[in-house]
Image (cartoon, rainbow, N blue to C red):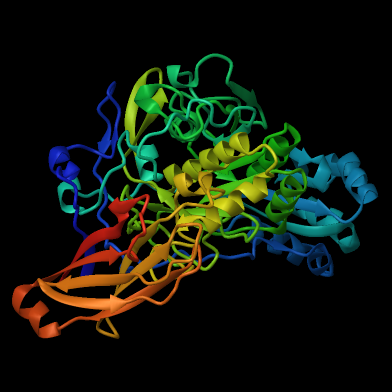
Length: 544
C-alpha cells in the first residue's frame, strides 16, 4: 500500500505535462522519463554496500615480512571493484616521511599523479608491485594510511517512468515557490558569496552573466563536450536568467571539474578539489556526486574546509537505498535528499540517519549550457538548492557564518515524514521563506506538514508543525476519512515544534474500495491570523 498527495490547487500541473521528460535538451532531444514516488512510504531497494575499508594502515601492510605476499596484497587492494585500477592513495605520518617518499618515488615502482600538500597525501599509479612492496616493507611508521582510490560519480539518473503515473509535483520554473515564497525578488541573493561547484565543469550560458564563473584546474581541465550536469547544478544554485533562475543569482561560481571523460571521479580528486575550493575562499562547496567507499583522506579534506569557514553540501544519492553515499554520509557534511515541489520524498532518494535536509529535486528547469534548458531531477539537483539557500542567507545576514546559515535551514525546515527528524527527510524540507523570516517575532504559521502510513500499526500519521515565532496553543485538527469527520484537539506547540495525530485505517474499507481519501484542516485558535493559510489544509490518498 502507498500514500500519495492529492493536489488541492485549481490546476493539476501534472496533467499538462503527460509525455514530457525529466531530462530534455532542446538541441538534441535526449530524454529519460520522470520517476515515480511512493509518497511517504519507503520501499528500499537493495542498498549498495557502504564501506570505509578503502585503506589499510601503513603499519599493517609494512608488517608483512614476505615481499611477494605484500606485493600480492597491494595488487588485490588496488585492483578490486569500484576503485581506480592500479592507483593508490598514500597519506604520511610526518612531513619528513612525505618529502622522503617524493624524492625516491621513481625507484619505488610508482608514478606520482597528484598530491595534496596540506594533508601530506599522494596519488600514485603502481607500475611495479614488487618494487613498491620493497619500498614499503619495514617503513610502516612513515604512513597514516595506504589505500585504494575509490571511484565517485554523479548519482545515476532516477529510474525512467511515465510522468503521468508518478503522482508527484514537478518544480519546473517554480523553484522559489517550492521554497516557500509567494513572490520574492531574489536578484541580490548570494551577493559576495562564492559557491564552488565540484562537478563536470560549467559551460557558458546567459544565466551566468559576465564574469561570475571562475575556474580552477585540479588535473581534469575545465569542461568537456558534455558538461551539462555541472552546468545544471551551477544554474540551480546561482542561475540568473529568467528561463533558468537559481536560488542565489548574485553569487559567484567557482567551477572545479572533478570528473573525467567517462563522467567518473575518485576520492583523491574530490578531496583535492575540496581543499582547493576552501583555499580559494569558497564559503559553500557543492558536491553533487559520491560513492559507497571512502577513506580518512576525504574526511580530513572536509575538516580542513570547515576550519577555513566553508560548508560542504553533498547529494545523498539516487539509489533508493537506506545508506547515503559519501561524502554525504559524513556527519560534517550537509547531506541532501530529494523531494517534489510539494515536499514529498522522491522514491529514488537515499535515506539514512546522517541525512540533514531534503530539498526540491524533481524536474527543475535549469540550464545545460549554450542556451539549452532542461528538466533536471535527482539529489544532484537538490544539493545545489541547499547551496544556493545557504548563499542567500549569507548575503542577507552578513554576520552569519556558513555553518550557522546551514543550521538556520535545518531549524526552520518543514517537517516531513514522522514528527521530528527522521531518516527519509532529515531535519525536514528546506523552507527558505521561513528561514529568512525567522526574526519576525509576530510570525504566525501553523501547518499540516506531512502524512505517513504505518502499515504495522494500521494508522495514518498526520503531522502538524508550528512554523511561527510564538507558542501555538488551542489549535485543533479536523480530519475526514472518506468524508467521515474526526476532530483532534492539539497540545500546545513551541515555535518550530511538531506533533502528530494517528488516524486509524479500516482495512476492510481499503480492500473493498481500493483506496481511502484523507483530508485534514488545521483550525487555528480563535482570533489568530495565520500568515500562510494555504498550508493549513492538505489531502492524501491511501491506495492498495
